[in-house]
Image (tube, rainbow over all chains, first blue to last red; front, side, top):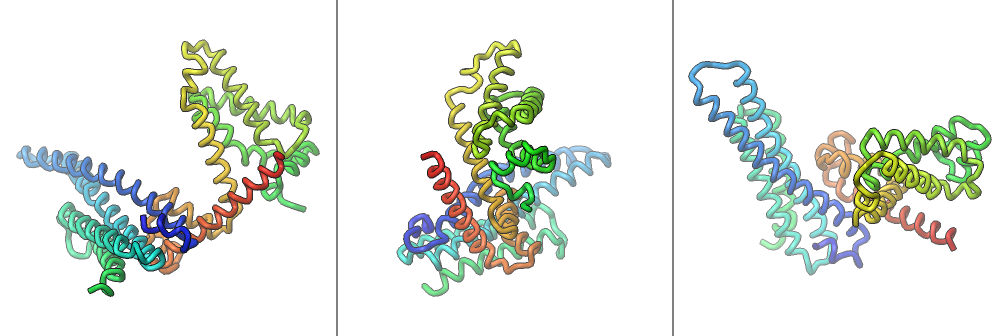
Length: 155
Length: 186
């Protein structure tokens, strides 16, 4: 919205609108996937717990499901970082009237990235140093920094 | 001497008529997706039927290239050949569906989308390699800014701006093509 309202004064505004729309479309698809893979992982976990004997094939499938359940929130965390970065850019270069809207968008995106990074941590039952968790945390941090760029001057 | 990939359609047709096989390969490469998209998206042909029409269209195009009076009209000429062959495939296939049912109310909008997608593809090809690469990574491969930054070794904070600038160039390229097309049709 910020970029869309800044077309007259910002030559890159159209390009930012296109990126924002692409990010929005990806977010919708990822949110749907996230629910699906989490449900599948939960069902696989329930199956594994209900059996007393060990089954290598079942254990492998469970591991696969847990991996998927972590992969999707990782993508969401990275998308949150992208959304926050784009919002920060729009807030800094777009029409000043809409800076507060850009700040709010960046803060929301940072919150999404933080929540998703937390899900990566929880879903994996992760060990410290897992590169996916490190990547999710880096996205969370990057998103937070983008939001702070807009929010800090107003504090 | 220009490479086939950089030739205009009119020059490409001229070189094909002169028996240049590289030029013919370029013509097929340049328009294969377009022809296939008309078959599959415009006329909803099965992959098998689309493949048959595809082969037939380019065979006919090769045989009849001499009859194309204006080489710059190659694209609409191929589109017309393709549409006719698609209609033949539908009416000759013993299908119960009519052409109208196959095309539906959305048929014309699908064709417009195909034309638009093809125009964008052509315009993208006119951008620098760096722009083509970064647009492909973000919009086609769904790569994040961080992944693009890591793989291309450019600062993550500049990716969104770079993409926006490349989109600006793409827009200019598209507008230039549209103006040229409008001018040539007057």
